[in-house]
View 1: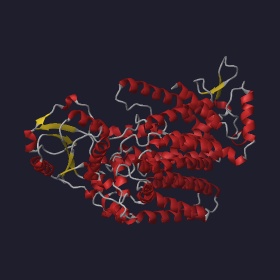
View 2: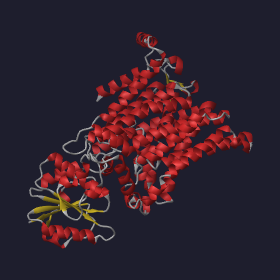
View 3: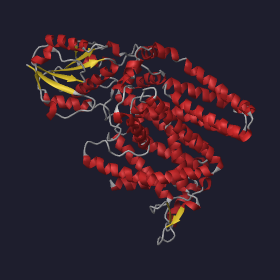
View 4: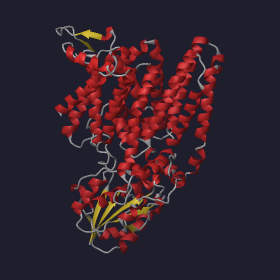
Length: 622
C-alpha cells in the first residue's frame, strides 16, 4: 500500500508539473534544494509545442480516469436497473417471461439474448409502454452492443458497461473546458479534470450499464453554455446565435437522456433570475431584461420547453410509471424525517471521498470512518477558504455564485420533492448527477487557490527555514492539493473493489448459499409486480448459469396486482405440480404462505447469512 501511495503521489507531482508556469503562475513541484530536477522538467517543457503543454496533463487525467473506470468492470453482478438497460437496449421486453408457473433459468434469461430482428423502433416502443425513461441512451446502447459477441448466449455485460465507462471518461476533458472557460484559467481546468478523473461518485456512475454518465455530459455542456451566457449578460453583448442553438440542442439531448435533467434546467433558471436581479440592482431599468442577450435567452427557454413538452404524452400514457417509482414514495415516522438530510449529505461527501465505511467488518469501518472524518476536518476549512478567496476577485465572484447557485438550487429541489411531494429523490444517489459537475468545478476553483495561495493565506512555520503552509496543519498548498487528489484516488479504488457504493443486490452470494445448503433440486419463488422483480430473479438465474452447478433449478414469478392472495394461489398451484423432494426458497415473497408450503419443513435460517437484496425463507419439501 505504501508503494501504491508513493507511486500515485509521484505520478500526480510529475503530471501537474507539466503545466506551464507562465500560463497559471506556479512553479513546477520540486523541493527548493532539487534545482537539477526543476531544471530538467523546465527544459522538457520548453521543448514541447505550446498546445502540447496543456494537452499532456489532460491526457494523463484521461488515462487515470479511464483506467479506474475499466478496472473490475464486470466483477460486480448486474442489478435490476442494469437488467432493464440490457433488455430494452436489445429491443426485447420483460413481457416474454412467463408468470405464475415454474420456469427454467434459460426461459427467465431469454430477454437477455441478442435479438437480430429487433429495430430501433422496438427499443423506443418498449420503453414508451413499459418503462419511465426517454430513449436516447437506449438507442445508442442498441447500436453499441451490436459490436460485441454474446457471452454464453447472453448479451455481453462488458460491452454494456463499457459504453457508460467511456462516456464517463469523456466527461474529464469536457469538465476541463467548463472549468477553464468559467474561470479563464488552465489551472482551474486541470484541477477540475483531475478531480473528475478520481471522483468516487463519477467512477460509481461509470461502472453501471445505465445512462447517467451521458446525462452528466449534457449537464457539463449546458453549464458551459450558462457560463458563456453569464459573460454576455455581464458585458451586455448579444449572445451569438451558435451558442443559442447549441444550448437548445444540448438541453434537448439532456431531456431525451433522463427526465431529471430538467432539474438541472430549473437550477439554471434560478441562476438566471439571480443574474437578472443583479443587473436590475445595478441599473434599475427593466428595459435591460429585453436587451439582446436576454432576447436570445428567452429563445433558448422557448426551444428547451418545446423539447421537453414533446415527452409529456409519453409519460402520461405510461401505465407503469407509478409502480416503477414506488420505492421512492412512502410515509415517514419519527427519525425517518431526518434520513433524507443524511442521505443528501452522504452523497455530497462521496463525490470527493469514500473509504470502506460500508464494510461488514467493524475493524474496517471504524478506521475508515476516522480517516474520512479527519480528512474532512482538515480539508473543508481549506476548501471553503479557497472559495472565499475566489469570491474576493471580481471576475471569479460571479462564476462562484453561478455554480453555488446551481448546487444550492438542486439540493433545495431535492428536499422540496422529498418533504412536500413525497418523492424521496435523496434515496437514489445516482440522481445527484444533476449538479455533480458544478461540485467538481467549485472544487477545482478552490484547489487552484490552494495551489498558488495569496500571501495573506500563507503562514510561516517556526523553525522550518521559512517554509510556508496553508492553515495550521503544517502542509503547504501544493501538498494539500495532492493529498486531496490522493484521497479521491483511493476512494475510487474503494468503489471499484465494491467496498463503497456497494451493489444493492448480491445474487452471486445468494447462489453460493443455495449451493452450500440445498443438495436437492430447488424452486426459487418470488412475488412479482413489475420488471424490477423479474430483474431480481434474472440476477440469480444468471449466476446459476455462470456457476453451472445446480441441478434443474426452477423459478416462479407469482404475480400480484393489489391482492396478495394471487401470489399465494400461484405458489399453491405450482407446488402441487412438482415432484418431490425439492427445496423451496421463498425470496422477497410478500404474500400469505400457501397451504402446500405447510407440508414442507421450514429450515432455521437464523444460522444462515443475510444476503443484500434477497430476503429468504427455506423449506425442505420431501
